[in-house]
Length: 405
Image 1 (cartoon, rainbow, N blue to C red):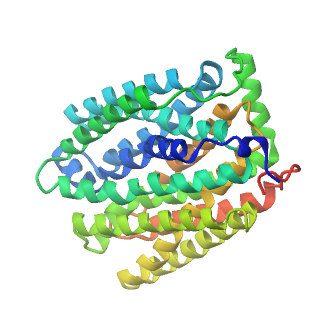
Image 2 (image 1 turned 90 degrees about the vertical axis):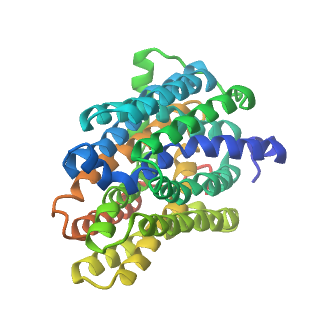
């Protein structure tokens, strides 16, 4: 059944513009996290800090993304999408500059927090804008298309970061991020109009009731937790793979960047496969397939790390686990947002908060076993992938309307 929103969807040319702009905004998180990963060991040496302290720059960024989305989501529901987005992009540029000039590790942690608060605007408003423009299967297809653009970020970011390190310091990475933020700020000013969407009240009581209603919505909670817990497995990989693959398996920063990029290709390919299958296969079936793929990959990664199998036998299931993101995220996002058009900003914020809060919990777990083993990273990834499947099976229910599969 074709909905009104699908019949009046933007033209193909307008959709291409939205894909590029919203894809760039969605890429804020992966770019800001992944680009500096190859530099983490060097940053620890340059700033005379422990590995655990440097990893806090990642935890601080994740926590800031969560906090920022909680605030910006309701703001965008009440004030429109453009003004909060422009303010967030400006804050991101300021935070990136502070990162580039930070003289010690703790000031860098604080600068990353500022940077993340600005990045949160891009992530939450991009997802809410998709809900403003599309509905049902068309929304899922557009989320899948976004994976092509935003999925390039984890492919290109570590490759670019690794190459930057061959001729500049890690500070140069943050200079590049500053330029990216400034470019997106200009693009939004000139090329992203205010989408037509119903406004909601900004009163604190109303905002809290909206969040409360979302939290107790069993279907929303199931889809949000499924995506958030699998995203936590991804963050365990992001935070631990640099140390595990370089320190335990002996990869160079450049070789690690290639491995990271290949896994990013898996996300893009899975996302594009999802876009082709949506409409012929129900979104819930595609989501379950992605979760099962993640659990299988996670279990094999753990077995490989525990048994100390050769690197190749670790990389194959790692590719499967990371690729499952491309199937899970578009379907989980579409199904979670389908029934919440009037509060798309708040619903988008809760989706992001669950992803990044659980990700912040997962990040320090990968370092519990020390620097000589990949087992803690593998166990964390496998555990969160399994929890994601459990959350979906126990909480998520089909939508009564059937609009989103």
